[in-house]
Length: 231
Ligand SMILES: NC(=O)c1ccc[n+]([C@@H]2O[C@H](COP(=O)([O-])OP(=O)(O)OC[C@H]3O[C@@H](n4cnc5c(N)ncnc54)[C@H](OP(=O)(O)O)[C@@H]3O)[C@@H](O)[C@H]2O)c1
Image (cartoon, rainbow, N blue to C red; front, side, top):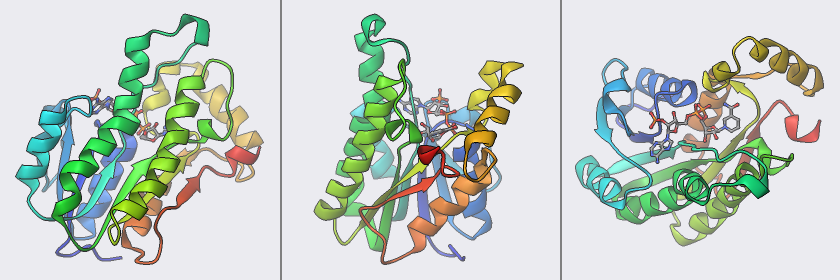
């Protein structure tokens, strides 16, 4: 797949999945801008970096103005507000919706007039929406909202295509916080997943570039979850 001459903006932290998309798109020939709250940490060869906080509209407006015309936009930030409903912190819930739902909607507002012909946007949902568990209600709801946001934006921004990726459990670096418990968690997840493994950032990156490139896919959720939502 060639992205030669294509201009891509990726919004999200320096995590495994965002980084892999940036590197793969660059290697495929795209001109990439990688934006996040800590631009100094967004290091990859041959790319531009910019500041963007999905909870701050002025930064998203400035990002769009600085980007000029683009072909592709990917937003994959997350600010999970986990914990039982009775213990939820309202501000954390708002930050979770800012990162996944409100921020991407505001990005769409500012980038909509800037897409070239054939333009496309990819949002990031997640398997928690299809496999709710106690303590992950906010995650399930934000990810579920992303799926409907992709459908609504696909209709309103047409012919710009808008799709969502729903990753399952992916070894992106995000799970390193589990420490020694990570390997056991991955082992149990792999055992239950129909694909019999956990995901890699490369799996999700490949699916993202395919969604951006395919001219006849819009308003869809692509489940890159090893079948985890069915397990
Ligand atoms: N990894 C998995 O197993 C998995 C499973 C299901 C779904 N997903 C989804 O896939 C996407 C990527 O996952 P990941 O594991 O690579 O990422 P991640 O480690 O969850 O990182 C998400 C990043 O979002 C950034 N962020 C949070 N709030 C933000 C804001 N207001 N503005 C800008 N950036 C913000 C943070 O970076 P800074 O702190 O540097 O700003 C954070 O590093 C996420 O949407 C995630 O929910 C992942």
